[in-house]
Length: 291
Ligand code: PXG
Image 1 (cartoon, helix red, strand yellow):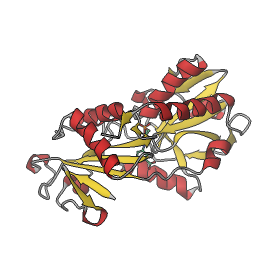
Image 2: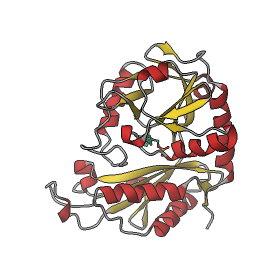
Image 3: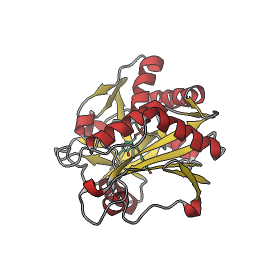
């Protein structure tokens, strides 16, 4: 594996950054998880835009243009012979001193890891996940806005630990008002009576790229506009179908939440059609890897 750090490639064993990098010391930085399918990087421009938005929100200057970063991402895939894979793009605050202040960090560090993909087992897509609601709530926007994809993921990691303690892989996180925000690393959707609903970003959700793709697929393939509305756990318990979306997960149905069986306990018809349409789209479009 060849890993990109600040314009140079290193072997896995030599890909190292300073222990004084504030990405390590404080989780000070931003990142993206991106997928490549069939020799193309899926929704690359959208991921790069979100990365720059996250960076802007934390006053981090990314030391290259959007175009250069897109080219570098494709190049990292090319050099690693990746046609289908998972790409982690990380921009840290860079090397500073032991103080919190980012002003001593002279230059951000840009890292691109283009690797293979560890998919969820296929049977989850056919049978559906089981989830619980965890006690750790999503961070209020006034503390650290969940729309920022920062390197500070402890909030989500604590929720993930709680899920695993209960023997499930994903969890519903609520916001401080008790509304559904999202999962630890996925957005959440519910379908009832043919209407598709998802929490708005202001409820504490990341503006997921896969979430946005589902808006498009629902419109084009099902003739339905997704509604962004505040939701309670009740709305998930009483839905006909539920699913989560994320770059790694793609679209996965969930069929049980907090012990309540969702719908008839099997992935629903609309969810199945969205999964199918998503798989077709990923094979068709994207930013070409071949130079
Ligand atoms: N919410 C959060 C908090 C996320 O981190 C999503 C939603 C889905 O967004 P996209 O743009 O991917 O559709 C994410 C992104 C993991 C993992 O190991 C998950 C993400 C990022 C990094 C790791 O589960 N999900």
